[in-house]
Length: 550
Image 1 (cartoon, rainbow, N blue to C red):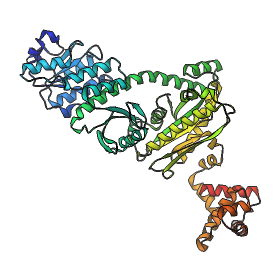
Image 2: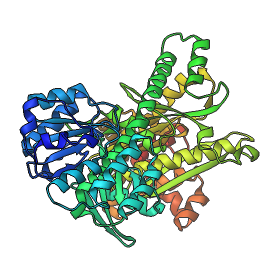
Image 3: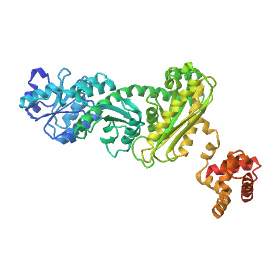
Image 4: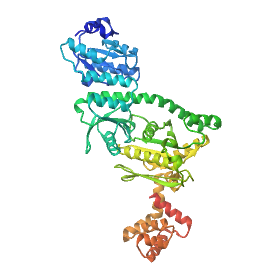
């Protein structure tokens, strides 16, 4: 069919935006797509129809048209439903590649256009196939349809159930059991390439990457079936989800700039208190409202491309905390102010009680501390149990997120969390406190560290170079290790238990299931071999630090 013949159909209201000589170009078949690079699905000679969902900036037009030209496409039809116009950069890109370009008005559906072209060629149309579904889904997304509504439409039009899962294992949209979502997130993180088919006890799922974000902060589009033979459909729906995510990101960029301004002002030499209070309110935190500061970095040793540790740290904080906060990216790490009310249960304000210790353990398979990531925090706030509960939720989300990303090889996620704060004057100190905690996490090879841990010997040891720490431990403890090797004894273990029992002979004997005289004998041997006196507090501290430095 000639382009001239298609343009001559008055009911379609098409307009040629390229060289008039293109009217005599022919095409065979119609292909509808919104993939950024659809070349692998094109056979050449088609009229390609696109809703422009792949376009984020002018450079995208050049890349898209280059892919069409390389595939030998005959012409391109650009719909106005999304942008309300055909952008000039797309017109220029088609001109450079001598590709005919048609302007498809909003009132002309791709389905109608394709049916008319197929009817002209004597081919029956399929009203339930790709021709109909694409236009309806694109129009819904362009009109601002949410992800849950999009999946309802997808189930209605295509008969497949979908969901979106974050890399941290959270369900962004759709319905999935929490444990299944976490396992599918792990499949997404470890898949050598996407799309990826995951076979689970609950069934078979196909995973598509939603956009070009780093996987650690990315989303996976999940379908409850094997769509290997329908990958084009999966890519197009992933583009729809990416468009919805991009729409939300526009607003979040403004919020991030406000957070950066707040952190910058708080870190300045002499910030104006009134301006600081105003910027805190602008960021959604009340003057006396409790909050914590969270900071993070994501190190990828050996990586030569992609986001830097601070930028990726900001992205993962937002994903860990379910996109309820934004993170300001700085040179030393990403920083987020987290109001506790955002993570409070509805009835928390009616509950009261004393402070308590909260603990979160997440089972993972990965490097670090064996197979368990441990997050511990002690919060003492008399009569404010809702504060403790919110902190518990925040630490749980951070711990689970870090545990999930341990599935990614050679990636170290380090997170620091401040104490509970309130008021604009506490922002600077909270950021510094969280930064110290994060650096301790970095020294441990990643994880979550809270403020209560940095005011201990652990921070002191973490700031000492590894070679100095090992030399200190070896000088004090090597005689004990050598004695244990020669005599198969337990002097080192006995010393550790004795110090843990605060120097109690009976307590140490009971814990080790030995006679108290055995403990006395062993401790005398420790003193003889090390030259230290365990009745002296200074010597006890030296031995305790040496044990912790091993």
